[in-house]
Amino acid sequence: MVADEVIDLIGCDREDIILASGKEGLGIEDILNAVVEKIPAPKGDPEAPLQAMIFDSVYNPFRGVEVIFRIFNGTINKGDKIKFVNTGKEYEADEIGILGINQIPQQTMSAGNVGYLISGIKVAKEIKVGDTITHVKRPCPAAIQGFENVKPMVFAGIYPVDTTEFEELRASMEKLQLNDASLVWEPETSAALGFGFRCGFLGMLHMEIIQERLEREFDMTVITTVPSVQFRALMNNDEYININAPSDMPDPNKFKHIEEPFVKATIITAAEYVGPVIQLCMDKRGQIKNQVYLTSDRVELTFHMPLAEIVFDFFDKLKTISRGYASLDYELIGSQQSHMVRLDVMLNGEVVDALSAIVHRDKAYEWGKRLCEKLKELVPRQMFEIAIQAAIGTKIIARETVKALRKNVLAKCYGGDISRKRKLLEKQKKGKKRMRQVGNVEVPQEAFMAVLKLD
Image (cartoon, rainbow, N blue to C red; front, side, top):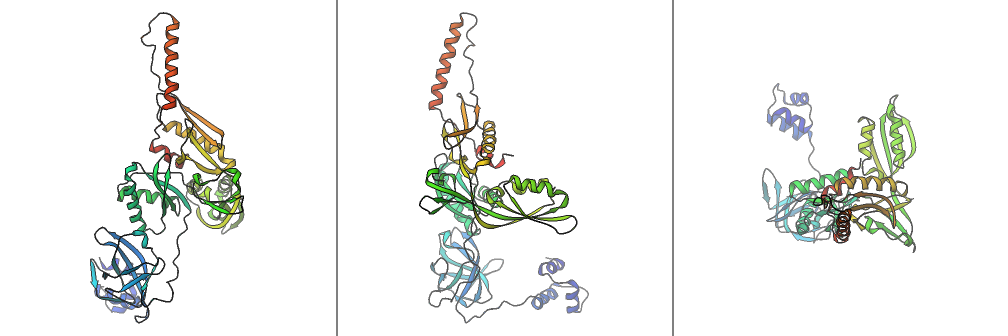
């Protein structure tokens, strides 16, 4: 690394280092001395009870999970009995050390050190980034502040394309969770897709990153279902239940109303795009709360909007209509009562639960129509007619039909009586009707992603 790059890395001013060293040219020794002077030493009491924070972890197939931590107070020795405060798990420090180009084992480490810990941990869920490490016999009085379980904003199902790869997918998800504490998942089953996982993400970008990492790092081909947010239903017995997926939604006669999460969205944009931005937010069921001109040509708009409308394509549309000159920030402000319904997609009368979604009643018809039209393009034609329907409960609100592939049964009839042709056509009609009753429709993988790209 050249001297200028080191200067940029430590954030020092070149002139200050030259004045401190009294030289025109700068060597690595001068820069290292500047590092010692400019960067303060870590604070901490080596004699206090052990208090170390986990900030990363790596999975080693031969040695288990390697924990990367920083010691704030106290001292840790090789072979000590240690405890993770937030999970309550106890281990023995089989090996500790500092991180160089390679791992350098140590007998003891004290306050200010950053290093690794190997305890033969095989279960990835036992490690949480932000957790506190302390001694079993002499624990610290309190955990390091700032640790809390993440609250996912977007929920979606992840299923293996080949159902036999379920256990491999589970192992891949556990390894991903090691250095991505914001990923939350639990097993679930689907009638259409088999065994898979219900996952919680921080947003749509986080979901796409997880999907890419599964494909690139673990060579797993997965199907992702329709993303949704967490709704709350007030049941008839005045208890609230959480709804993370359309399959969790109770029958309409069992609950009083459904509440959906709302956010306070702050948008800063150029003054010439105020009209289109406000129109976009209104289309997404937003309510304008404030409008402030920061300068003569920059405006700050504040809206209260449903989170479900933001997680799909809102940011992309905002950037498009403002030609990239709009920024978005949002924070949760609680839940509000909304008229939400479950929209089911049926192929030949069978519900495909992976394509179902929870949508607002006013947008159900538009959503169902667009989804049916998109599926008509993606579902391959069969020897029988396929009906693609969108339904709310028992009411069909949209329908498209994939026409059957038709064999020309009249090819061998040249001339002759018309009754012969009619007989062949009637026979073909009966065969197609019977085939439709027993035939299965294979849904391609692209169809499950169609919901994300309706526009």
